[in-house]
Image (cartoon, rainbow, N blue to C red; front, side, top):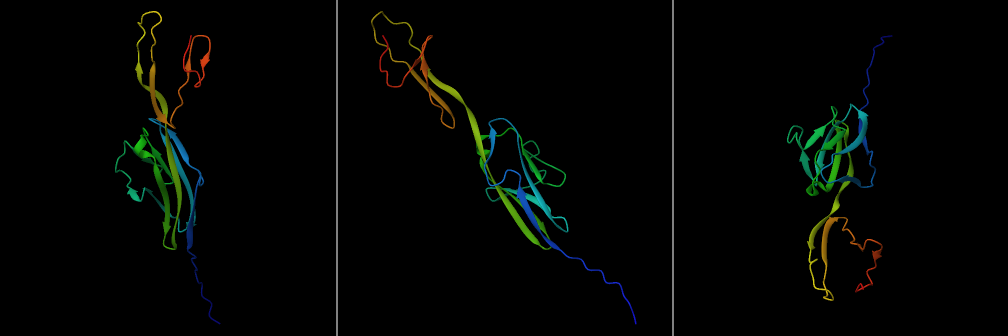
Length: 158
């Protein structure tokens, strides 16, 4: 009887999970955000990322993007509104490929963009005060005096 050793290697297709799950990841304007995905498989999968279907290459824009050693963590530095997108983490090995999607929502703090300041008026004259603000989500504007908030139903103050 002749015995021989046989070595069997089983390739396992990758599985990948985003730590953010299917929920949106969020970031504030000018902050950094880290998107993370965990991948398993054999041989160990190679991880890559896309933004709205376009590959994000390592070393492409090191001031904007940072990667962990294995690629599982993508850090976006100084987040801007145009970073709001669908990011896909792709794990690939010789047995196949799998991906996970993260939707990044970027929030912008409210900012007053316009105030019409007409404070010098004659007694009994009517003045109209105007205020505009920007932000994401769209901010609500509340007027108040030194002693109370002014409701949106109030058209005049005496």
